[in-house]
Amino acid sequence: MPAMILHINGAPRTFPDPATPFTLAALIESLNMKSDRVAVELNREIVPRDIWPQTILKDGDHLEIVHFVGGGL
Image 1 (cartoon, rainbow, N blue to C red):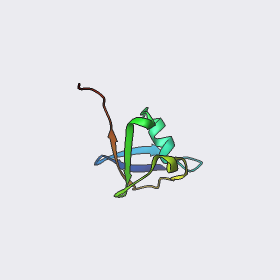
Image 2 (spheres, one colour):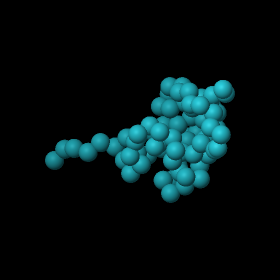
Image 3 (cartoon, rainbow, N blue to C red):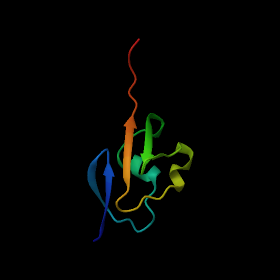
Image 4 (spheres, rainbow, N blue to C red):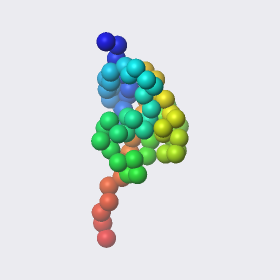
């Protein structure tokens, strides 16, 4: 079965090559992250949250995912 490699925060991660296009929204969900608490850069471009469902990921893409954590006074 072919695999897709995505580079997330500098580390390669392998995902099964999906039968249907693998979107950024699907990736965030598969990583069990809350979409309202992350920001994503794809190949050095910030991706607005409202287009994540239409943003199709490709083998070799580079992503930086920043997860916001609450706290403080």
